[in-house]
Image (tube, rainbow, N blue to C red; front, top):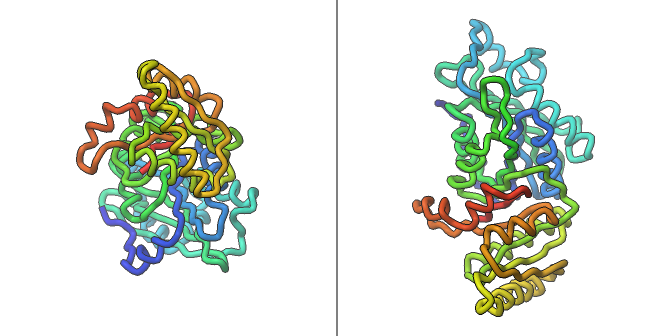
Length: 322
């Protein structure tokens, strides 16, 4: 496939930006996730990219379509092409929230994809402060692959997608749990798998006292501060004898946040199976935050970890921090 060309200068200029990739499929859950992303990305230093991924071709056979796509803004086509109306609705919601404005400068881009007359397309909106909102219609062999390929065009600080497990006709939506899991396992950045997300209940950060967990505490505290979400901490002891260690883990994390001038709303220490205890506490919070303990190239370790099992089994939104 041919991707939209990105110069090295363009990618380097993004490194100082906070960039959010939001995966849209037209479901209520996807727009709820987008509203959360809008809270995270409300600052002038943040860019928001709305992404719809569709399979190659989908029967879009038209001799003049490719030329037309290359010359026109995709939102002005007036065609019922897959994904366009979902992206347009997302942009309209951002305008209603005051995040976007019709007066922003607008640029359209098209890139051909072999075997598909529509190809990859995006519209980039930029305001006077340099804030960017992008609508991206992307072609890929499957949804998870398309999301991961889009990261390579980024970079992004966080990917947000849903996990309702719904089906759309004969084609799985991107909310198929297998898609969410694949992205969470392989994405190089933090991934938020959203399940009925409500920003008002804050983040529950899991810590085991490790250096990786402390790094997660710092990173998520920054994310939570961007959306003004309260932060709480949890550590789980496997048995009563190690309960003191769990309390020490929470206290150490609390001190780290104090140094960052971030208040801790609540601290929890539990005894039992870490997965069960974290999931049981989860519904009182908007997001459960876990560490990716695997090293690059060793994703199989993550798949057997507490973090992965929480991601699979929780009723609450889960963020895997990298």
